[in-house]
Length: 160
Image (cartoon, rainbow, N blue to C red; front, side, top):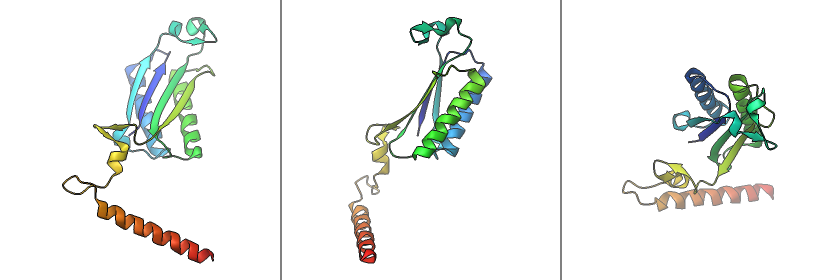
């Protein structure tokens, strides 16, 4: 359930915005393994005279700038996956809204699963196994603990 906020100085068409959203969603699914049905994309244009690099607005600059801020759950992706996604997002934005100034950014922001969610539930709450009545399924967690301890014991025994 990632959310992608993209800010651009470039004036883009509705079709280009749709293409950015579609390809952003594809990057989230194919590179980061996220559920594309839960991926949201918001695109905002900021006038070049309101975007500053080194205290100078881009109003007289021939390049554009962009910021893609992507929120994902903490520890849900490897360093290699995150690096590939950052590269793919930069290439996408440079292709459609560029040429981009080198001071254009892609930020993957990892949030603890207790600190965000959707539909009024945190990601942590969505991971908690519950019974049909909505109570926490303690039997499930007791069995999970037993399995984990047995696995740890087996690993310890095999290493002796």
